[in-house]
Amino acid sequence: MTTERRYDIDWLRVIAIGLLLIYHIAIVFQPWAMFIGFVRSDAFLEDLWKPMTMLNVWRIPFLFYVSGMGLYFAMRKRNWKQLILERSKRILLPFLFGIVAIAPLHMYVFQKMYNMPLSYYPHMGHLWFLGNIFLYVLILLPLFVYLKKQDGSAFKTGLTKMMKSPLGPLAVIPFFILEAMLVKPQLFSLYAQTWHGFYLGLLAFFFGFLFMYSGKTFWSSILKWRWLYIAIAAVLFVVRYVEFATEAPGYLTAIESNCWIFGVFGLGYKYLNKPSKRLSYLSKAAYPVYIIHMFVLFASSLLVLPFKLPPYVSLVLIIGLNFLGCFVIYELLIKRISFLRPLFGLNWDAKPKQVLKQKLKSEKVEV
Image (tube, rainbow, N blue to C red):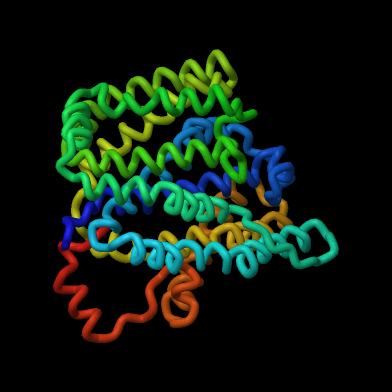
């Protein structure tokens, strides 16, 4: 069974990974960078963090939503056994490899930069996201398989009908408000390796799947009401910035976060749902780049920061080196060395006949 490819979701995933790189680079220039295990510049750019405070409340939940949507498409062609095998290859294998071989690399750079004894330190680091996703698949798969079998059920009919209203997508927000009130995170944007990040991600992953399951009415609604969602989010951001010094109560931030996400989905559906050669390349590169970007960021910082350049010059150089380094490693190593490909979430090299077959079907494949 084939499904129409959703190019907007591909584009939004690529953009989200790009924003993640920028976000992590910005941390290097904050005075508290070392407290969360980042290298730190001696010259700070604290004003740079102001726009980041808008981004950091929705960037990670957004990726969890997209991952849930991706699972919906994956299930269209696979039974539960095939799906677990496929997700093990694509998510669990890179996650475990990253713990022992990738995350320790940027710790070596950190130790060298601060003249610490070099030691091997296997850890999840930024790859915690992959571990969460794989657990969500295992936890929610029985329910998703059941829903798949009940495709014409009263539940789906009711869900589809509910999504016709502008309030339909917003109906999931009370669950996020409840999570914030029960877990009481110290910071809403503190997702990595926290129970808040786990439960928030689980909700976003689940509802991302449900939005796709509900059919096109969800997308029609967010397309029509995208500016309403963005306006709500913008007002709440101003309130958070002015009244709460960017750290508003969790229930307000949960509303803002989801409204930004629904607005972004609406904009993507409006402007990005079209194929391109650039997207074809970037959508394949995004996942390996996500895996390696922290090592490249730390290495770039090690090269640039000792020169004590003006901070904005250092920022531009680190951004350039980060994107260039990720491109070179992906293009010359990960993409071209067969045994490395599955370790970074790519398929093994396809045989010529498979390449031709995939090319002929490029307009109708899963997301």
